[in-house]
Image (cartoon, rainbow, N blue to C red; front, side):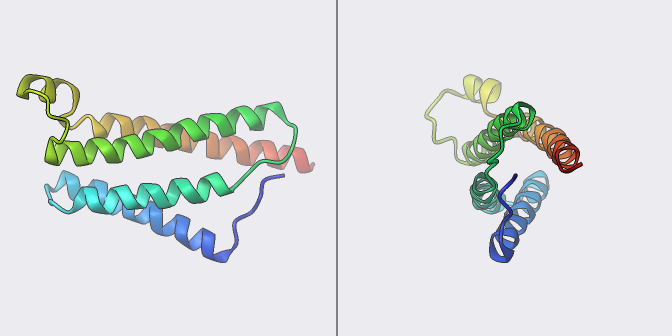
Length: 132
């Protein structure tokens, strides 16, 4: 069984997801405040998703939860790259910055989102199969 979030936790998770969408959209539109909307949103979303624990013994769901946690780390890394894209606080030269940092948050975010979609769909199907 998956631990269900209460009303407030669900609202915080929704707020985090909304902040992530607004932050990534605003970053594409070159708004300077975008990383500061995305990063807290990612923190909220990840924190609430980690509160949803799986307490069963099904190996498939446990594996999917591990993949979901990898996706959570990628969301946080995308936020860090988004901030680094704007501030270049890493102290690296311009060529390395363009090669490793510049707009690579998009790739990391895409991989995280695809993993979230896959695991969310599969976990729901496996839990439904479990209840039957």
